[in-house]
Structure formats: C-alpha cells, structure tokens
Amino acid sequence: MASSMYPDFPPDLDAEQQKYLLQNVEDWSIAHGLAVRPAATWVSEQQDPAGALATTAPVTMFPSLFPKRCFDQAKSVAKSYNELYSAIASNESWLKEIVEELVDIDEFMAELWKVHLAVKKEGYVQPLNLGLFRSDYMVHVDASDSKPKATVKQVEFNTIASSFGGLSSQVSAMHRHLLSIDAYPESTSSLIKSTTLPRSTSVPELARGMAVAHDSYGKPSTGLPTCVIFLVQDPERNVFDQRHLEYALNSTHGVKTFRLTFARVLADTEVDANRKLIYSPPHAPTKKFEVSLVYFRAGYAPSEYRGKQDWDARLHIERSAAIKCPSILTHLAGTKKVQQVLATPHSPHLKHFVPDETRAAEVLKTFAPIYPLDTSEAGQEARKLATNPDTAARYVLKPQREGGGNNVYRNAIPDFLKTLPESHWPAYILMEMIEPPAQSNVIFRNGEMQQGGVICELGVYGACLWRSGETDGEREVLENFEAGYLLRTKGSGSEEGGVAAGFGSVDSACLVDL
Image (cartoon, rainbow, N blue to C red):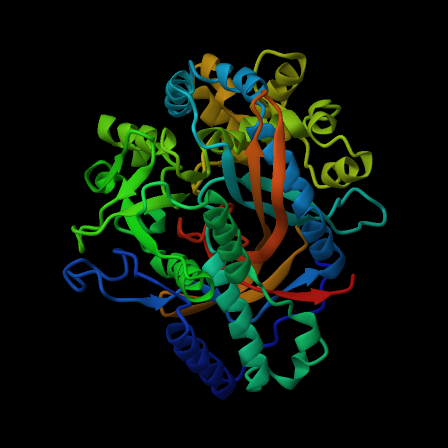
C-alpha cells in the first residue's frame, strides 16, 4: 500500500455520536433492503431453521474518499469496455485459440467449451446477447515516481453474475440520508456534501438493460406470456441484492421475473420443437411462460456444477431461444486469460477489437501489467518473477475463476507454485499488484464496528445488447450504456475484496480533488 494522499478521515466519534450513527445505519438498512441473510458462522441453522432472518449487509459507516478524476476516468471508459467484450464474445475463432491453451489443464473451461460446441453443432437459434458487465478498478500510486499521481488500474472484468448492483444503489442512498440527518460530525462538512456523494444508478440502469433485452426478444411465437428467469444459487445469502433488480423490472417495466436454481432447470423448464424455453412455475403448475431472458446469478464457479445434471441444465438453457446473460462465449470472454492477453505489454489484440485509437488508448491506460505463465518468452520471464520471493512480492497470481477467495498474493506465490506441476502453471496469470493510497474507515459487519486502514475497489457497471452476425466476428451493437457504480471496501489486511465471499463491505464514494 502506498502512503496516504487523502485528508485525515474519518473523525473519531464520541459515544453519543457513535450511538446515533449506528442506530440509523441499522434501522435504515433493514427498512430499505440493504441486507443479506446471515452467515451460518454467525447465526446457526438451529437458530434460524427456516432461513428467514436478515441482517444489515456489511457496510461502511462513512462514504470512502475517492479521487474524482479517477472516478470519472473509470466511468468514461465503460462503453468502450462494453464494446471490447461484446466484440471478443462475437469472435469464436479468437476465443478458440485462448480456450484451447487451457482445456487440457482447466476442466471447468473445457466443460464450458463443450457446451458451446454442442450448441454450435446443432445450430444457435438466438443471435441476441446481453452483457451486464462490471469492470473493477483500484486507485494506484506509483511510489517510485518523484511526483506520484493517482490513476485507476483494472483489477478484473466480470461478464457473469456481476453482483451488488442492488445493494450499491441502497448504500449510496443511505450515506446521503445520513448526511441529511446530521449523522456525520461537523468536522466532515468540507468533505461530505451532497455534491461530493455521487448517486449510484445501478438498480434502474441494470433493470433497463434487462428490459431492453426482454423487449428485443419480440412477441412470443407460442402465444404464452413472457418472463425473465433469474438463475440463482440455493441457498442464496445475497438475495436482497437480486430482489432490488427483480422489483425494478416489475414495477418500472412491467416484466415478470421468476427465480430458478440449477437443480430445478430440467424439472421446471422445457425446450419446445422451435427451441423456445418454456417455464412452468411450481407454485402455479397450470401456467406456462415463454422465457425471453435468462439472467445468470449462478453458474460461475466449478463447485456449482455437481454432476452431469447441472451441465445438462447449462446446455439446456444455452441451446434455447432465450437470450442469455451471459452466453457461454460471453462467459468465456471474461476469463483472466483473456484479460492477460489484452493487457500484456505490447499486445496487439486491443486495437483489433477497439479500432478507434482514442478509445483504445483510454482503455489501455487502465491496464495493469499482466503476464502469462506459459512457455512463451513473456511467460518464461513471468515464471522467473513468480518463483523469486523478492520479485513475487510485487505480484498476485490469479486463476480463471470468479467469486473471490481464489487468488494467491505476494510472498505466498513461490511456495504455491511448488505444489503444482509446471504443466498446470499456464492456467494462472501473473498480475502486478496495484498499490492504493492508505486511508481509513469504519466497517459495520455482523453487529460489530471495526475501524482501521481500508482499501477500496470501484466497480463500474455496463449494459450492452448486441446481435451476432452470420460471419464469425461480426456483430451489431443495439444498446450500450454505463449502468452505475459499486464501491467495495475491505480491511487493508485482507487481500480479497469479495463481499459475498466474506472479506469486504459495500460502500459509496465521497469524491475529492487530489
């Protein structure tokens, strides 16, 4: 972590100030669905056998300071990233080269690719694709620079189950509410102002993206009413985050939504002779719906595919005429290997997919150096860096996985690699650590407040609807817009930032000029 560039913040609170702030955070969060189901480690199954309890989501008591220039930079490239990843997902031959490097050493990617090949052999029937993406960044300060300047560097790009859009809008609103009721000390008035607290529009914008896809699906040929399916995990602690999107789809756009788990896909849906996906709700078995869109909030981790039935369920959805968010190819486009191929210094691939030089240059500025661990020249150099304890301290090792808890950091890298056959090293990428400036905040989680050093990660959502062309690599972008932001904050002693994975908290930005 770099030295601090921020003002001294947050202030210490006396007992009465702390009591007032905490009481309002607890009450407002539950009243507005800024909540999660409690973890079993905090509330046991014996205490909550029905799984009905809810608790305040891990949140920061204060909005975290974030450089305005960096915030604006991250939001400004959202549409370019949408363009980039929709182009990658539409270029099967390019993706094939990436995937074929990994299928022998990454069983999960191999199985995903098999699903694609099976549908390709039968013939795809739905050219429309929806991406609800999230590009994650951290503020980086190069300590070796004589005049260090804050910039944003991309941590990763998420193409499947880009979560916390629902809670992001709520925590942004909560911090604005706390300001309005004087919950923050007078000493913060020069920093925390309505003009420095940007609203997160992630709920209405992500819902708009789904509604646009739903409308683009067209009139159902079956004569049945249409619906959107949320494919979810069971159990799902983060249910309220998803519910905010469901409720917005229904109340704002009049779109019916239903929740479905992998375990129920084959039982509750069928693919008819015209490949339409038909859903029969278990609570109303006499009713049937034609599914316009399947929105994946599950299916991103190998552990979710417990056997053949789950893979059959993924194939069942993929071969149907429902629009997928994401399709298999869009899912694969979000692997860390693709990020590495784009971000390796002097890579020619970015300009291939984003031919506009100005837009490509803006995206390039957000890349942190990333290297393969294969046998190429760049890979051999990366292997030297990763196996040397002195140089490994500047890097993070990442697999092709989403969901948090999968990375290996700094000095732990050399010993970890010793546990793997060298033939498996190419399944990982080596990324230069992003060094954020030091700052502090107060995190409220599981009924306790913890104050100390924190690290913030900014996620910018994007919505993109495109139609794949008949020729590989061709596509028509129908909708492309930035869709709000998420700030996640973790204790500076934790390398991982995934809130659902148990390491971080949801937050909002307080913009400062640095």
